[in-house]
Length: 221
Image (cartoon, rainbow, N blue to C red; front, side):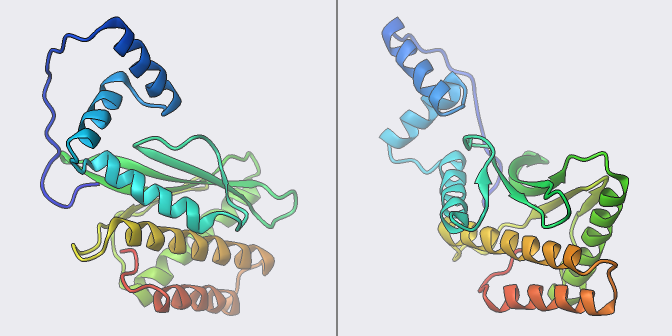
């Protein structure tokens, strides 16, 4: 995640002992990152440099802490570019929804994006889920004045997460993302509990989103 300009990287040659490289490789494997990424992280921490990777890790840590104990489970160990969670959907056989916060490159500048995904061959379920995402998008448009690059297709929802103002810390940003995910998950389950969706269902979804707005000093745009 960047708030100022682009992330510059260059190639450098280093002479390291085999023992050091082996130790770095073991640590990189444990952290699910590359050798270069691990060396960059070690050196940045040593010189007290706040890298984009470190900032994203802070955001991810806050998301995990806030969602811990609420039914969300880690799908895999977080990396410096992705945090993946899963949550059961309250519908028939309780299919698994996957929530991923991903680091993406937008014109050379790194941003975060939320991906919500369901892997299913059930066409009725896919159709219902796509309808919910469209309702949620309209609710955000009307109540939150949010108009950004959503993508909805085959039970997959992609939503860029706009970086908040400078005064919002990375910890607060992570908390806002977690609250947004909670609101989205709550609204989704309400929708499936009251199928077929009608005006009352949409109103309940709007109430969930309004509660999220009231609880957020800087709602996710």
